[in-house]
Image 1 (cartoon, helix red, strand yellow):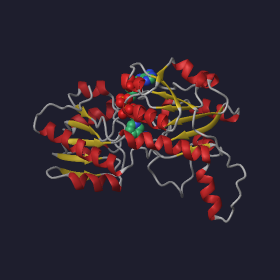
Image 2 (cartoon, rainbow, N blue to C red; image 1 turned 180 degrees about the horizontal axis):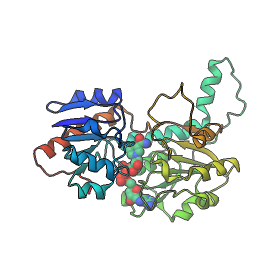
Image 3 (cartoon, helix red, strand yellow; image 1 turned 120 degrees about the vertical axis):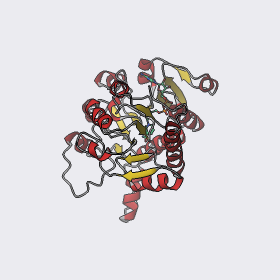
Length: 327
Ligand code: NAD
């Protein structure tokens, strides 16, 4: 199959070329959108990532160009208009699972760094400042951690935090019996908000979960709570969280995803003027740690993403059952 990759980074090229034997690749750095869609002319498949925009207009153009398959090289599919894809008779496949450890461990990395201020200590020591002023953290042991969404990533995260001696509260539409056996307590969303010292989001972005963390939810949280989001940016109403940081309801914020991350994350903008005032405001808080959507970025996850995506495409070419189809 001929495949056009959008939003390509060097690591995508590296891993996909390493595991490819039969398909033809065109790699494009630009994101797929209304302007760039013509680059898909003459290919069978578009291979896209989290910030490629597959709205009805783009899907209509893809269909006219003869594209038959949308292969997401990620788990989330909130950026694809599935109704438009169905109407265009275009199949959509994804990588439902690729090292949940990668993202769960990144959530832990954010917690550890925010709590013990490792990022500040690193910079201080490099400048010859060996003072411990304002570096005081807290023991994670016996703290209450609220996990919103206990699927693959949330489940791994709950077990990691349980291993550190934390009490785990969870909220999900479906309860995982193995987690209950491991000591996790399922509670209502409100109880999780009220009881938790640390809240970590691991549910998908849907119409139901957009701005799940809004002003009302923030008002119920413990004063000084640590909020972690490695899932999708729009789970949090960013303006509301800025207010909660200002009034100190939120004591720490660690985010790997941001509502308006498109066109910002994954890019080197160090010589540009940042146009997003909300992100700029977030970057001014001393108790906010932002990473640019790197939760998935481990050798193991990139390997699995390449292998599964190529298998999805080969299965489509061979008219086999698409086990990873999004319907
Ligand atoms: P999953 O499908 O295995 O688990 C999601 C869980 O959320 C399910 O148990 C589901 O029942 C639950 N859920 C759905 N709606 C809910 C709601 N309203 N309230 C509470 N729980 C709800 O998915 P996963 O593989 O664990 O991934 C979780 C999310 O992580 C993905 O949707 C994706 O957005 C994000 N993700 C981020 C990165 C990254 O690099 N930062 C990488 C991969 C995935």
